[in-house]
Image (cartoon, rainbow, N blue to C red; front, side, top):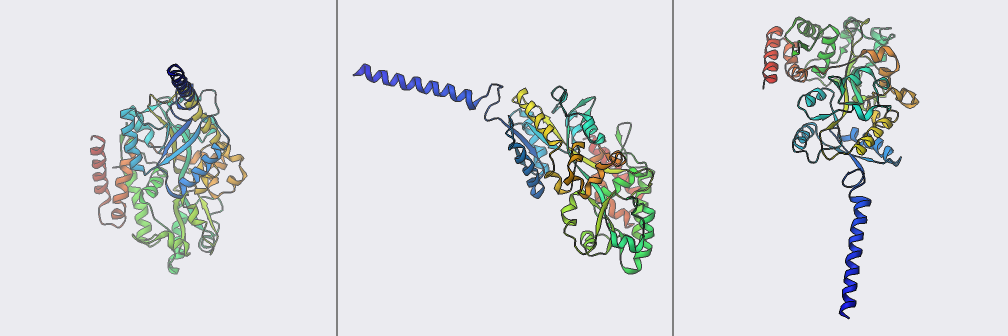
Length: 417
């Protein structure tokens, strides 16, 4: 009886060992060395309704039954930055990919935190010729690709077609509105209590006009903002403000535009859902206001997929990531319903996308060529300081040149920290 009982015990132990081995082969660790289930972990700072749209696209991809399904984890921008720095230093808990801002690629690369994509995308459809050139260049650092383009947000302009016909008929026929035309509209509309220009996000307005006037954000690798072009840029906004063609600080421009009290409203492509609610008049979307109609410049930003350094990510999984990025080239319809644009030219084959108002930025070579993305060292510091000081300059509370000197010094100090 004792021998019989011992035999039973040994049989149970053997069965358990075989079960454990089988479990390891089938799920706990696959042949490529990936621990856990075959899943790509994507970190993003996109939250709210926009994150829901991205999730819909990811659900569509996962429904194709790929080798590696994608799981997105969204968090606030500052939280994302802190967590990426922490996990990359420790080498543990690093996401398989992260969606980062265009200006962050060079910064993370300089800190030695990113892995290049080059050998993994060689021979695939993930290549520069399939994307907007400027969006692809954002991820290129020192000849290697450290970022792969996702979607693009742009500072464009919405306008009230009825008011354009009333105050500056024909001005929008070429889809380009110049500051000269805005001043003309302002003079005609002011007696009726209608603004020609809605000034909302200072940094975005400044960035576009500054670039159009020939401004640069770096000289010899160092940030620059204390220059005559910056002075000239602010003088143009002061001119519109002092003439009464532009709003005063604190006025709700989106509300005024919705109520038919603003002709031209520079805003982000991300405002599409708000604009779509307007029913009292016909509106349209076009390039941000231009200084020179013959040299159109359109400020934008293109988020990038980046791989942060990790010892836990297998080559097989990276191939799965590239397969996901390839699929996105023609399948970002849900994602761009927020108002953003795809960076992949493959989406031009999607009729539903090409009917969206923001699609004008991809439809012609001229429009694609106009896209400009700033990644200069220190540019994010400049943008932050301009945002803070712009209204004081425009309202004449501070001297423009003196304030720009202060901004330059602050930016220099931050760069040297």
